[in-house]
Image: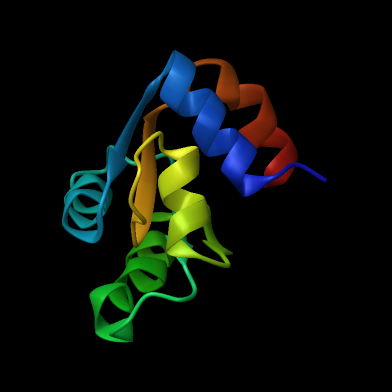
Length: 100
């Protein structure tokens, strides 16, 4: 079982990611996102409610993680983040292929 957070960590180190619900939404709408993760504990939920729907519409893999802190840590920032999008996979491509 490939971990969503591991994919984000590897993509951050070897590719390119976008952090935050606004950046992630733009990446999805422009068709640049290749993999998306969002935090279950985001409050208010309205901040991220549209993300899974947009991903489904565009055919982008979308996964939920437990906390914003986990997502932030995987993204290499010291605060939590509601959502992360992988823009360039880098070494994470192999992991993403296993996850889908």
